[in-house]
Length: 402
Image (cartoon, rainbow, N blue to C red):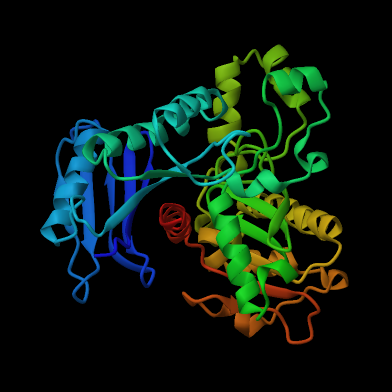
């Protein structure tokens, strides 16, 4: 029997998202989420997708730690005949946020790799520890099975030094590994390829600006299937305006907050990552609420929307300059896929760059990749639903199959 299944795990500090896929046809067999791990009110929601798709099963009660969470996932999968002991399981693919400069490809995890991942924790203290915990727990349950780490930063490793290097003192920057790494890489990789397919081209002959717009947001410039620039930097804080993150900021604002505002480093970190962006500007980090309030005449919501769009337009223009020739601008993730208002505002006024929307196409809601640009537009505008789990599974499966 050929093993074609891949379990994809995305382990957060108090949650585990998972999907089981069969790479023979890229179909999903089950999806689920464990949340509030370590609390009395933990919750596991498991949805089998085989046999016509059964209803979701929900467990609510204490789930002590990630080991208990993954054991719960394994038990739920077993009820559907999809257990982790199945010989059809080829690998477990793990989302790892930060790979530093060492990990630029999917990697089978062993003790040495785990040690390297631990050393990267200072670069992603909120994410990598949980990612590592998920790998360790999965290894303990299936030590014989390949555990494959797929890195958010990997797709951006192709950036030229002129794009990734900050204009800092080189000795200091190199000693502390300070550079632009970029994130959401699995999404940018998947969407840039799917956009090329939508245009009837190969990735190698297609230049795409990818706009991953969710609560976290990032842009990338992809030339011929290769990332040449991206908006996030050393951390996911840099770049576009996000739900709770400020995005680009004069670094001296931090000095001012410390010297004049009397804020500690931790307070400034929390301010910029959790209390800024849309929520800082208008009190809502949900773009749907921002748009609703804006439509009702709320001035702070209107300002938040305008700041968000202004930054987005700047990156579209900047990456058009970086690429030289743009074949498509692709919107993806929760906001990018679902907000016709954001797409319209972002593209409006960019006719000189060859961009124009078709209003009727843009207003349509659909789950499939589609073009929303006007027929006469020189540059295509696409809406491409992202699929990071499929991308992780695809990379993990390709690695273990050799």
